[in-house]
Length: 317
Picture 1 (cartoon, rainbow, N blue to C red):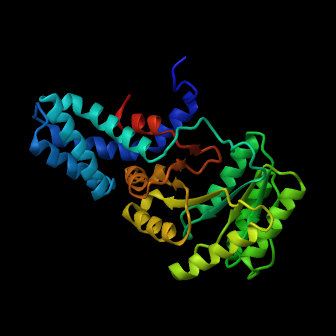
Picture 2: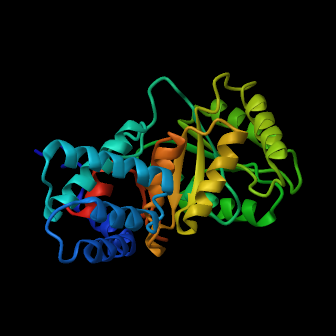
Picture 3: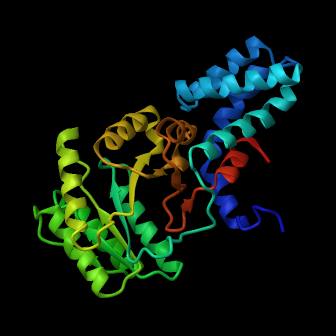
């Protein structure tokens, strides 16, 4: 049994399909860059740098990857263009490993944390509420009892959407009237979950706060109120980013990591974009593990991130 045998054929097909636009984008540029060349030299590395930057890997992360490849070329003395893809894949996988991105088989929670509390943050429009619904589905499928908290009380649509997801998945949604205090909703959700011995709580939060100070104050208040019910909550602060926005996702990550202690990332909408390289750059620049990736609109199309399979899907086995 191979080390990655748990990654099912169906998951791999979904991943390959979801990343197909990015793979086509990267490979077409890579093929043009190495056309007619037999070895990796300075000109080749300049071309590779352009390929990575234009694939939304990001300037700083690209320079880091190029430096690693330069060191490999220097050490090995002669590297052919045929070997370049393998080296590129290896160095990107190593980079993701260094950023605490841990391959996981599925949807599980640490022992001793019950209920395990996830606070989900992100701007409106990135697929935050949909990601929460899909997470609830996956956790329930894994045998967990899940409670959802509709703490984005600024938008009626957000509450309604979460309620629809709750009904679809078959999990309770705790809500209050529009304009209620978000921290109060979080308090009620954790209290209900704890009273009913639930395994999981996922709290939706507003994405429309006007600036970093407002955002910081609101999220801090929610955390403080939750800790009155469960002292170490939230266990996970999950930032949802829209992969199709490319470099804009970097800016969003910068704002949210400055406002609260984000310790996990979900990158959505990768199936509709050629900008999947943003996963590599964001993981590297913010040193926060990518935990989930969204690869389509289907309820099964949210996957636990597996760095090895992700890199293999982009660059070949």
